[in-house]
Amino acid sequence: MFAIETKNLTKVYKTGHFWSTKVQKALDDLSLQIPKSQVFGILGLNGAGKTTLMKILLGIIRQTSGVAVVLDMPAGDILTHNKIAYLPEIPYFSKYLTPMEILNFYAQLFGIPKKNIKQKCEYALETVGLISRKNSKLKEFSKGMLQRVGIAQILINDAELLFLDEPTYGLDPLASKEMRDVILQLKKQGKTLILSSHQISEVEKICDNIGILHKGRLIAYSPIIHPLEDFFIKKIKENE
Image (cartoon, rainbow, N blue to C red; front, side, top):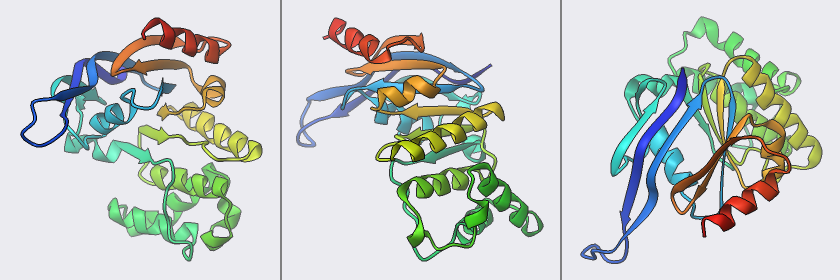
């Protein structure tokens, strides 16, 4: 049914000194439903609440009030840990390792049986188009290739729900196109992908639906509308 569902989700932070009574709402009564097997884009200005929402859904922080459900379980539930994965904007790997060495390490962390590790690693690298470079040192890789190693790493446990933070940020046009192709291929496999991005043109090309956050509130939930940038700016101005 839904990969993610929130109801009246609110997150309040105290500001100033620890004895201060001042508070700031990072999320304000946010209700959202994201169907499975689609690419969903989260858009918003800096400080809109995108990072806070992702952290709650990943179970890194807890909401102040409201409900967050991920894959039919409360956000952060240990039973969902093997079903979700996160790719930060700038993944970090030792430049002296190879993709196979990195994936082998993560496969062991996930408890994948030794007899299946090689097959799992090669499948992940095949998916992101790096199988021919599986034994190359990462110091030889471009930023786009490193991003694809990051995607392979989060695929190693065959996660159902993938969170991607600015997956094409800083990539050249060719690398951006390759990353889009990988994302769309994962969607075809039935995975759900959540993108947080400032790059409206990239979101416009790959997302099925978008949610626009502004000052902690969901001000728009819509299929992709062209031109998306005009729609985004219009909604922000309406809610100032």
